Length: 79
Image 1: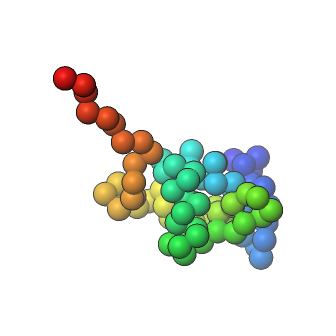
Image 2: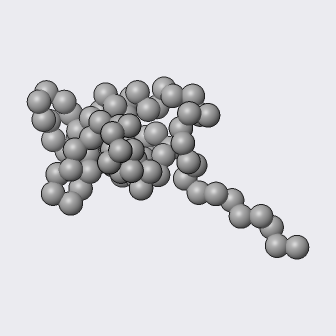
Image 3: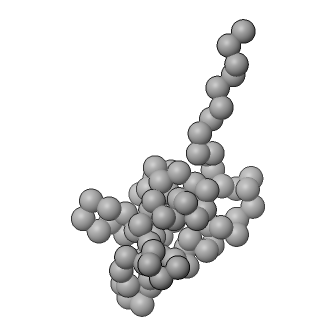
């Protein structure tokens, strides 16, 4: 959806990390971490992180086992 594109930089359409998280199933925090360590291409724009739409599409195609930490870890039931 073109409404999700926040900027075009060097001919790449960028989406905010929150939207990338919604599309990929990763948490926004994890995506920011992956950008920081260079595992995912992305840019800081002020206080926000943005990821190229092509990178979001690549992440969506990854097998689930390669997707890193889940959004949340279920806690064991209290006994």
